[in-house]
Amino acid sequence: YPLYYRATAALVPAPTPTNLLQAVENCQVTSLYMVPTALNAMYDELDNYDIGSLKKISSAGENLQPALWEKWYKKTGIKIVNGIGTTETLSHFVSEPLDIEKVGSAGRPVPGYNVQIIDENGNPLPRGETGLIALRGPTGCRYFDDIERQRIFVRNGWNVSGDLFKQDADGLFWFIERADDMIVSSGYNISPQDVEKTVLEHPSVAECAIIGIADEARGKIVSACIVLNAGYDENDATKVSIQDYVKQTIAPYKYPRDIRFYKSLPRTSTGKIQRFRLLND
Image (cartoon, rainbow, N blue to C red):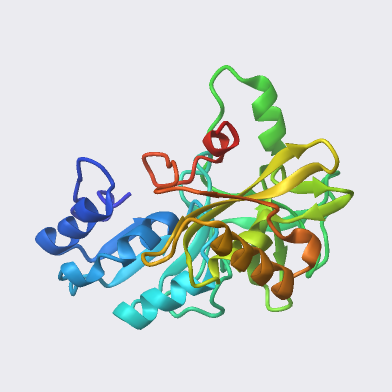
């Protein structure tokens, strides 16, 4: 859609932090559309490039953590615009305005879209309750030769993406997690997003992805796949420090019983973490 508005699109050979920041500097880019993991990777290299031309950053594809928003704002003065869209609907259908209302929220419905929170049976839920986000509007597409997937995604004229959200009293939408990501351990329902957010607050942690791995006694346990900041060692002392922080910050049963260190986390070409590859490690 940049071409629709007669904007110039800067192309890079691969979406690495270096290539992206070089493109911003060399092409005088004014607007970036990125996933949070890419923004996090770019942050450490900001001092090496002149990004003074940049006026707007839009985030989608993953949950934007408030800590990432804050550090970008303090460093650059840019307020990252958060939102949610799907491949099937082509772009954002919920988005924050340029003047951010609440850091961390996905914002409000984009003009032309109707958005609601529903239960598994398609019934609308009141504000404050967590459920599936459902939308309808001017964009959309069908799955090619996949009737079953189309049936799951489109229900009674509403597109249901499989993401859990809630809408607050002010009408803002907040991402909770993917409906199929919940970790059930010893009968407890554990939100990977809740644990991930807490682990990322630890000073040693640069990147984190939370997954559930099979455990004979508990069904599943929480596993933290972590990239450390420079100056921290991949040892048991670091693991215990992270585990203790999670226990003290949120419910003790949510702490990651398994911690694995990585030099980098596997990602798609657009920067999303490939959790299925972590599950296969």
